[in-house]
Length: 272
Image 1 (cartoon, rainbow, N blue to C red):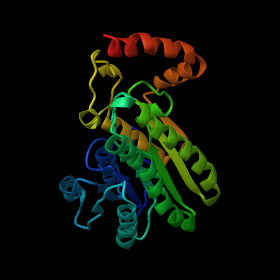
Image 2: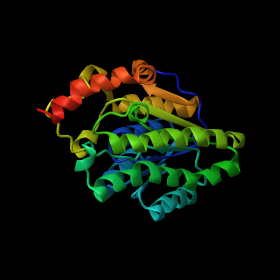
Image 3: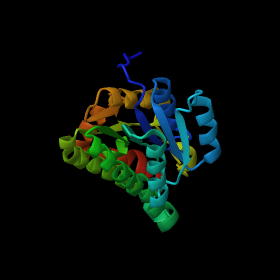
Image 4: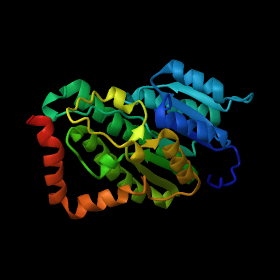
């Protein structure tokens, strides 16, 4: 349990990728704590069902089906949010997906370009669309859901890691740009999470290597971290805490990490 700061119940949060997983759990948590929530994702039926479940008599939840890879959809989400609620206090950039395979096996368009378009370009576009409103109000908080792949790039994650390294760089730069306007910018860096991510990532591994269950997060774990950030802004959160050791090992002993990954994963996968 964590202490919830008082809210005026007028605050508005946009959550992208809200139809499942981390996005859905985050939307539920914000709504439960009095936020007016804008749900954005491609799956219209899921969004509308979630909105109906979370909405009270005063209609505090807005479902806006949108493809984050399309600029016109992003602009519509922001316009509809401002029309309905008149303000945007928190943007949770969560929409994203993975295609985890060897680079030579990825399709240039449907895997590489599409992934970068959603995970990085769409996130940037959404932020850019919301930022002027936050600057004008001298208030707001942008929270980017990144990944441990933002720090540690592993085989089969080449394009996914590229997108998440980009999110980390974008987050750091924007935080330094926007702070003079009172706009906060944070990032969450989770390790493996039990969501639908793996079902769509097309993972095919001889070794069956994956995040062990004892280290795997739930979508609710990440949602709680996002909500805590919204109430008490910080630069970043790494989940679980143990992953700080992995980041340090990768930074200070990269040769050892390279060797271990080569022997324990790449060679068994590619040579056997």
